[in-house]
Amino acid sequence: MTMSRPTLILAVLVAVLLAGPMFIVVPMSFSTAPSLEFPPPGYWLGYYRRFFSDPNWTGPVINSFLIGFGTMALSMLLGVPAAFALMRYRFRFRAIFRIIVLMPLIVPHIVMALGYYTYFGALGLVQNMAGVILAHACLSIPVVVLTVTSALANFDQRVEQAAANLGARPLTTFRLVTFPILRPAFLVAALFAFIHSFDETVIAIFISGRDSATLPRQMYNSFQMEADPAISAASSLLLAAVLAVIGARLAAALVKARSQPFGASS
Image (cartoon, rainbow, N blue to C red):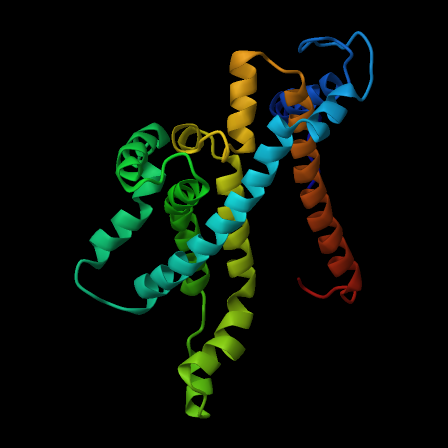
Protein backbone atom coordinates (compact mmCIF):
# COMPACT_ATOMS: atom_id res chain seq x y z
CA MET A 1 0.00 0.00 0.00
CA THR A 2 1.53 3.28 -1.15
CA MET A 3 1.20 6.58 0.66
CA SER A 4 -1.03 9.15 -1.02
CA ARG A 5 0.45 12.48 -2.12
CA PRO A 6 -1.41 14.63 0.49
CA THR A 7 -0.37 12.26 3.25
CA LEU A 8 3.23 12.34 2.03
CA ILE A 9 3.22 16.16 1.92
CA LEU A 10 1.75 16.31 5.42
CA ALA A 11 4.38 13.88 6.71
CA VAL A 12 7.19 15.95 5.18
CA LEU A 13 5.79 19.16 6.69
CA VAL A 14 5.54 17.56 10.12
CA ALA A 15 9.11 16.24 9.82
CA VAL A 16 10.41 19.68 8.81
CA LEU A 17 8.49 21.31 11.67
CA LEU A 18 9.96 18.88 14.19
CA ALA A 19 13.53 18.59 12.90
CA GLY A 20 14.02 22.03 11.34
CA PRO A 21 14.85 23.92 14.55
CA MET A 22 17.45 21.29 15.48
CA PHE A 23 19.37 21.67 12.23
CA ILE A 24 19.36 25.48 12.29
CA VAL A 25 22.08 25.39 14.96
CA VAL A 26 24.48 23.65 12.55
CA PRO A 27 25.11 26.62 10.22
CA MET A 28 25.02 28.95 13.24
CA SER A 29 27.89 27.00 14.78
CA PHE A 30 30.09 27.95 11.79
CA SER A 31 28.98 31.59 11.81
CA THR A 32 31.43 34.51 12.00
CA ALA A 33 28.85 36.66 13.81
CA PRO A 34 29.82 37.76 17.35
CA SER A 35 26.43 36.54 18.61
CA LEU A 36 23.79 34.01 17.65
CA GLU A 37 22.59 35.03 14.19
CA PHE A 38 20.80 33.25 11.38
CA PRO A 39 21.53 33.19 8.51
CA PRO A 40 25.26 33.50 9.21
CA PRO A 41 27.11 36.42 7.59
CA GLY A 42 30.14 34.17 7.08
CA TYR A 43 31.63 30.85 8.07
CA TRP A 44 34.62 29.77 10.17
CA LEU A 45 35.61 27.21 12.85
CA GLY A 46 36.26 29.68 15.63
CA TYR A 47 33.42 28.59 17.88
CA TYR A 48 34.52 24.95 17.69
CA ARG A 49 38.08 25.96 18.60
CA ARG A 50 36.70 27.92 21.54
CA PHE A 51 34.56 25.00 22.63
CA PHE A 52 37.47 22.52 22.65
CA SER A 53 40.00 24.95 24.19
CA ASP A 54 37.91 26.73 26.84
CA PRO A 55 37.88 24.96 30.26
CA ASN A 56 34.44 26.46 30.85
CA TRP A 57 33.18 24.07 28.15
CA THR A 58 35.55 21.11 28.27
CA GLY A 59 35.19 20.77 32.05
CA PRO A 60 31.39 20.38 31.98
CA VAL A 61 31.68 17.88 29.11
CA ILE A 62 34.01 15.69 31.17
CA ASN A 63 31.75 16.11 34.22
CA SER A 64 28.68 15.11 32.21
CA PHE A 65 30.34 11.89 31.06
CA LEU A 66 31.59 11.04 34.55
CA ILE A 67 28.21 11.79 36.12
CA GLY A 68 26.41 9.94 33.33
CA PHE A 69 28.48 6.77 33.75
CA GLY A 70 28.21 6.97 37.54
CA THR A 71 24.45 7.39 37.28
CA MET A 72 24.21 4.51 34.83
CA ALA A 73 26.14 2.17 37.13
CA LEU A 74 24.18 3.11 40.26
CA SER A 75 20.84 2.99 38.45
CA MET A 76 21.53 -0.49 37.08
CA LEU A 77 22.83 -1.68 40.45
CA LEU A 78 19.60 -0.66 42.19
CA GLY A 79 17.05 -0.73 39.38
CA VAL A 80 17.63 -4.26 38.08
CA PRO A 81 17.08 -5.97 41.46
CA ALA A 82 14.03 -3.78 42.02
CA ALA A 83 12.61 -4.87 38.66
CA PHE A 84 13.18 -8.54 39.48
CA ALA A 85 11.57 -8.07 42.89
CA LEU A 86 8.49 -6.46 41.36
CA MET A 87 8.09 -9.13 38.69
CA ARG A 88 9.19 -12.32 40.44
CA TYR A 89 8.01 -11.96 44.04
CA ARG A 90 4.80 -11.22 45.90
CA PHE A 91 5.20 -9.24 49.11
CA ARG A 92 3.26 -6.81 51.27
CA PHE A 93 2.98 -3.24 50.05
CA ARG A 94 4.21 -4.30 46.60
CA ALA A 95 1.89 -1.80 44.89
CA ILE A 96 3.08 1.00 47.16
CA PHE A 97 6.70 0.06 46.44
CA ARG A 98 6.02 0.25 42.70
CA ILE A 99 4.47 3.70 43.08
CA ILE A 100 7.42 4.95 45.13
CA VAL A 101 9.91 3.62 42.56
CA LEU A 102 8.08 5.30 39.68
CA MET A 103 7.32 8.53 41.53
CA PRO A 104 10.34 10.46 40.13
CA LEU A 105 8.75 10.14 36.67
CA ILE A 106 5.54 11.76 37.94
CA VAL A 107 6.76 14.54 40.23
CA PRO A 108 7.95 17.69 38.36
CA HIS A 109 11.72 18.07 38.26
CA ILE A 110 11.61 21.48 39.90
CA VAL A 111 9.91 19.93 42.94
CA MET A 112 12.47 17.13 43.04
CA ALA A 113 15.29 19.66 42.69
CA LEU A 114 14.08 21.70 45.66
CA GLY A 115 13.76 18.54 47.74
CA TYR A 116 17.22 17.30 46.79
CA TYR A 117 18.75 20.71 47.46
CA THR A 118 17.33 20.80 50.98
CA TYR A 119 18.01 17.16 51.85
CA PHE A 120 21.43 16.87 50.22
CA GLY A 121 22.46 20.21 51.72
CA ALA A 122 22.10 18.75 55.19
CA LEU A 123 24.25 15.79 54.11
CA GLY A 124 26.95 17.92 52.49
CA LEU A 125 26.18 16.58 49.02
CA VAL A 126 25.44 19.91 47.34
CA GLN A 127 27.92 21.35 44.83
CA ASN A 128 29.81 18.10 44.33
CA MET A 129 29.69 15.29 41.83
CA ALA A 130 28.52 12.63 44.28
CA GLY A 131 25.33 14.56 45.00
CA VAL A 132 24.56 14.98 41.30
CA ILE A 133 25.10 11.25 40.67
CA LEU A 134 22.77 10.32 43.53
CA ALA A 135 20.09 12.77 42.38
CA HIS A 136 20.31 11.65 38.76
CA ALA A 137 20.23 8.00 39.83
CA CYS A 138 16.97 8.64 41.67
CA LEU A 139 15.54 9.97 38.40
CA SER A 140 16.98 7.19 36.23
CA ILE A 141 16.07 4.17 38.36
CA PRO A 142 12.40 4.31 37.25
CA VAL A 143 13.55 4.21 33.62
CA VAL A 144 15.66 1.13 34.32
CA VAL A 145 12.82 -0.54 36.23
CA LEU A 146 10.31 0.06 33.43
CA THR A 147 12.70 -1.24 30.76
CA VAL A 148 13.70 -4.38 32.64
CA THR A 149 10.18 -5.21 33.84
CA SER A 150 8.94 -4.98 30.25
CA ALA A 151 11.57 -7.55 29.23
CA LEU A 152 10.80 -9.77 32.22
CA ALA A 153 7.10 -9.77 31.32
CA ASN A 154 7.96 -11.66 28.11
CA PHE A 155 10.66 -13.82 29.69
CA ASP A 156 10.03 -17.56 29.73
CA GLN A 157 11.04 -18.75 33.19
CA ARG A 158 10.99 -22.35 32.06
CA VAL A 159 14.51 -21.96 30.68
CA GLU A 160 15.68 -21.04 34.20
CA GLN A 161 13.79 -23.98 35.65
CA ALA A 162 15.43 -26.29 33.11
CA ALA A 163 18.87 -24.99 34.10
CA ALA A 164 18.03 -25.52 37.79
CA ASN A 165 16.84 -29.07 37.08
CA LEU A 166 20.20 -29.76 35.43
CA GLY A 167 21.99 -28.75 38.63
CA ALA A 168 22.86 -25.10 37.93
CA ARG A 169 22.97 -22.85 40.97
CA PRO A 170 21.00 -19.54 40.97
CA LEU A 171 24.07 -17.41 40.25
CA THR A 172 25.18 -19.75 37.46
CA THR A 173 21.68 -19.75 36.01
CA PHE A 174 21.61 -15.97 35.97
CA ARG A 175 25.08 -15.72 34.41
CA LEU A 176 24.63 -18.36 31.71
CA VAL A 177 20.88 -18.26 31.01
CA THR A 178 19.07 -15.17 32.31
CA PHE A 179 21.68 -12.53 31.55
CA PRO A 180 22.32 -13.53 27.92
CA ILE A 181 18.59 -13.49 27.18
CA LEU A 182 18.01 -10.16 28.91
CA ARG A 183 21.25 -8.56 27.72
CA PRO A 184 19.51 -6.31 25.13
CA ALA A 185 17.12 -5.01 27.80
CA PHE A 186 20.02 -4.35 30.17
CA LEU A 187 21.91 -2.46 27.47
CA VAL A 188 18.86 -0.36 26.59
CA ALA A 189 18.20 0.39 30.27
CA ALA A 190 21.81 1.43 30.82
CA LEU A 191 21.76 3.62 27.73
CA PHE A 192 18.52 5.31 28.80
CA ALA A 193 19.94 5.93 32.28
CA PHE A 194 23.05 7.54 30.82
CA ILE A 195 21.08 9.72 28.40
CA HIS A 196 18.62 10.69 31.12
CA SER A 197 21.51 11.91 33.27
CA PHE A 198 23.47 13.54 30.45
CA ASP A 199 20.43 15.55 29.32
CA GLU A 200 19.13 16.59 32.77
CA THR A 201 19.31 20.32 33.53
CA VAL A 202 16.97 21.41 36.32
CA ILE A 203 18.44 19.32 39.15
CA ALA A 204 21.98 19.98 37.92
CA ILE A 205 21.35 23.72 38.30
CA PHE A 206 20.33 23.22 41.94
CA ILE A 207 22.79 20.53 43.00
CA SER A 208 25.97 20.88 40.96
CA GLY A 209 28.56 23.49 41.83
CA ARG A 210 31.13 25.25 39.69
CA ASP A 211 33.57 22.34 39.74
CA SER A 212 30.86 19.74 38.99
CA ALA A 213 28.80 21.68 36.45
CA THR A 214 27.34 19.58 33.64
CA LEU A 215 27.18 20.47 29.96
CA PRO A 216 23.40 21.21 29.99
CA ARG A 217 23.90 23.53 32.97
CA GLN A 218 26.79 25.30 31.22
CA MET A 219 24.68 25.69 28.08
CA TYR A 220 21.82 27.12 30.14
CA ASN A 221 24.11 29.51 32.02
CA SER A 222 25.80 30.57 28.80
CA PHE A 223 22.51 31.34 27.13
CA GLN A 224 21.14 33.18 30.16
CA MET A 225 24.21 35.24 31.00
CA GLU A 226 26.00 36.14 27.79
CA ALA A 227 24.60 34.04 24.92
CA ASP A 228 28.04 32.69 24.04
CA PRO A 229 27.88 31.56 20.39
CA ALA A 230 29.96 28.52 21.37
CA ILE A 231 26.68 27.08 22.60
CA SER A 232 25.77 26.49 18.95
CA ALA A 233 28.92 24.40 18.53
CA ALA A 234 28.00 22.37 21.62
CA SER A 235 24.48 21.85 20.29
CA SER A 236 25.77 20.78 16.88
CA LEU A 237 28.14 18.25 18.43
CA LEU A 238 25.33 16.76 20.52
CA LEU A 239 23.13 16.55 17.44
CA ALA A 240 25.94 14.89 15.50
CA ALA A 241 26.41 12.33 18.28
CA VAL A 242 22.69 11.47 18.24
CA LEU A 243 22.66 11.14 14.45
CA ALA A 244 25.78 8.96 14.59
CA VAL A 245 24.12 6.58 17.06
CA ILE A 246 20.96 6.43 14.94
CA GLY A 247 22.99 5.91 11.79
CA ALA A 248 25.00 3.11 13.38
CA ARG A 249 21.81 1.42 14.55
CA LEU A 250 20.23 1.67 11.10
CA ALA A 251 23.41 0.37 9.47
CA ALA A 252 23.49 -2.60 11.84
CA ALA A 253 19.83 -3.35 11.11
CA LEU A 254 20.49 -3.13 7.37
CA VAL A 255 23.47 -5.49 7.60
CA LYS A 256 21.40 -7.93 9.66
CA ALA A 257 18.54 -7.78 7.15
CA ARG A 258 20.88 -8.44 4.22
CA SER A 259 22.52 -11.37 6.00
CA GLN A 260 19.20 -13.17 6.45
CA PRO A 261 18.09 -15.61 3.76
CA PHE A 262 15.54 -14.32 1.27
CA GLY A 263 12.03 -14.72 2.60
CA ALA A 264 13.11 -15.44 6.18
CA SER A 265 11.12 -13.74 8.90
CA SER A 266 12.87 -11.22 11.14
